[in-house]
Image (cartoon, rainbow, N blue to C red; front, side):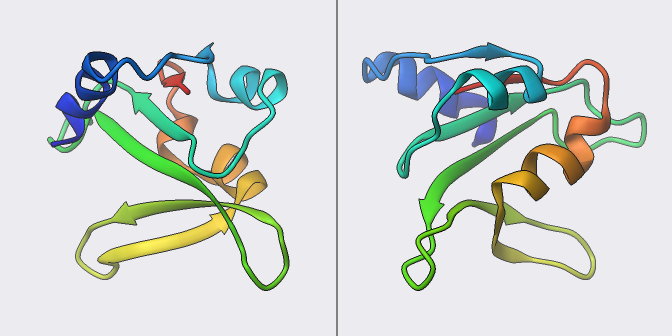
Length: 103
């Protein structure tokens, strides 16, 4: 479903705010809760995903902006919330030099 989500946002008229490398996008956009982050990257050689979607949220207890995303794998399945810093600086998909971020 991730592959078609940006197309669905386009069809619904949701504008793209920024496109580029992850750290460039992080620097030029004032993130707000409800924003959708869409990532495109080449699929891994062993197979797997070539796109990912995350949502900007706010921690109701601390007020901190967070990133909410689903994860999958042998040991981790579900939805996680992590800090914006960790999302942009520690996410595995961002380590790939060809990752493009659309917000």
